[in-house]
Length: 372
Image (tube, rainbow, N blue to C red; front, side, top):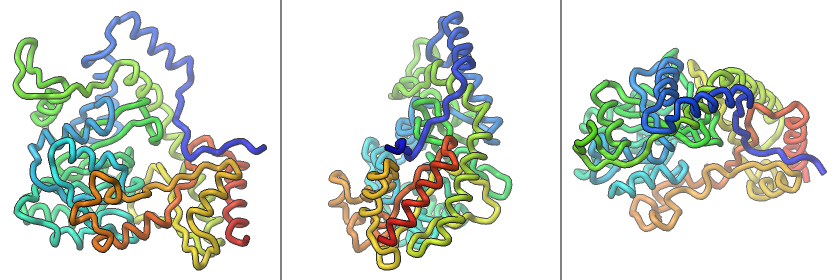
């Protein structure tokens, strides 16, 4: 039987290197609460990603929840239904009503042309997602937000290292949020971060993620416990040394996929934008059943039969899930493009450990499945 090809494989730093960090943590006897490696990783990532202020979190979901608290967002927030459910869950946990807007068929991101029609007196912010690391139309979104005095919080979970015209897209909006979950291009096992634009906001965010403490005996606001510990920070530091190599291998895999898929009728993929440097987090393909010959779900099962684990990402839409499907904006009539994309997408395996043999197997199944 062929080996199983997974949709993603975490970046594991060399064990000896990680052990060196662990030994030093044991010697320091400091496991969490802004320890040595936590502070070092914040600085390293701030420099590497070309951002001004960086606050590490224990996961990306808590970073989203805290970002909404930091900006005191209330009422309604316009967002996308085509994302991982944590995007809307962060709103729910803050008592905020998500208002879903349809997506652009080319980028899979929130469609700026649909935003203004969804704004009400209760709207306080826009929360777009850089889907698959594809940059949102920041200029148009900012223009709308400025005109209506709305905040912008970017869910940039997929956008580690992504830059546009030489500048990090993490600098877009009032705040941007990263995820460092094990399935991401860059990982701290579990983890996340908030990127902000001032030292004052960073202090505010740092307080919120540590119960609201300001000093040993003073609690100024009701914060949460969302700190990244020293072991995860050390893992992140060790991994950071190899991330460029991993991204380059992902890029080569993406090039091989594109060349092959160009020859397969009924399968398409996202086109790269000019001036954008990608991290190749995912490789989504879109199935046109009429042209390809079988449905997306049939292909998904066929891949599994060959021990190739794709992922229908994002399916179903967030708006389809029980907590949200009764919202007026969740109506399928309001989200036709998102619904179509969700029904046609599969993310193929995409990671730095894919071999030429692995890619050849995947492409062979894609070609043969449609013919049958």
